[in-house]
Length: 162
Image (cartoon, rainbow, N blue to C red; front, side, top):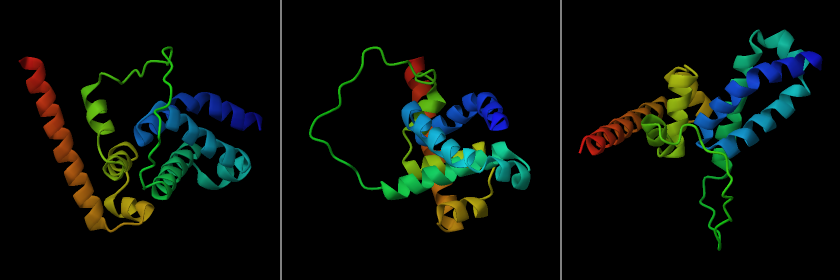
């Protein structure tokens, strides 16, 4: 397990950033990373011996877990009262980044396609298989996401110049 501990210490900051991009917020990212690392920690010797690149394996596991969670909770959950917010909540370092704001505003499927395509470097066929959708849907979701990102970034640039 010492090797797994070393792996976690080294990879954790990057995994949290990756999870943040996938989920859209740091809290869900931390939950996702913890869930995946718990599962992989129990099979660490197998992962090391059979995968060749444990970090890539963990990232792929995170993407798969995120997609599975997204499928289970597709329906909107309405609540009677808004949760209390803590005035001491840590500040999101990407909060004022225009691209991050635009990416966060995308619908979950479009955001997931963009992350898998441009962060994870998966092909359209690999994304289609991972999300259990057609390649045509991957293309259309990516096209819609890119158009939306361009429009939002263009609007932000125009708004800042005025």
